Length: 127
Image 1 (cartoon, rainbow, N blue to C red):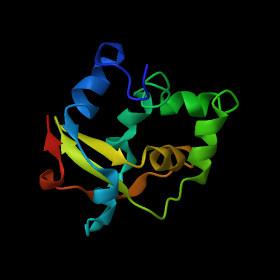
Image 2 (cartoon, rainbow, N blue to C red):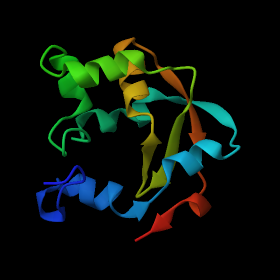
Image 3 (cartoon, rainbow, N blue to C red):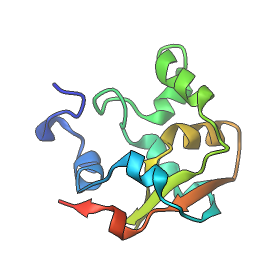
């Protein structure tokens, strides 16, 4: 299996959300977008989505067993909360395009708010 996985191996939530459109994270970083704060509650659904290790590992599992998932746990600890999370409104949810490790770190530290940048629809290509 490739790092992206095959369509028939992906959880339904990954196929219906993350693979419904394309984005270039480096192009998004270059966008001059306003930063605002948002309640973490609107983004916490990401903690239960298997976004890592070929769609087998959720951010919540990393928090629950940091020794077993030491690599992702270290990435989360190294995440810099000074950078906002890039989000996009899709299918009635705020989706994180870049910043799941930052969300996890903010949640672990008990933050109630996080800095975000809302990515416009013009930066997204639907499949």
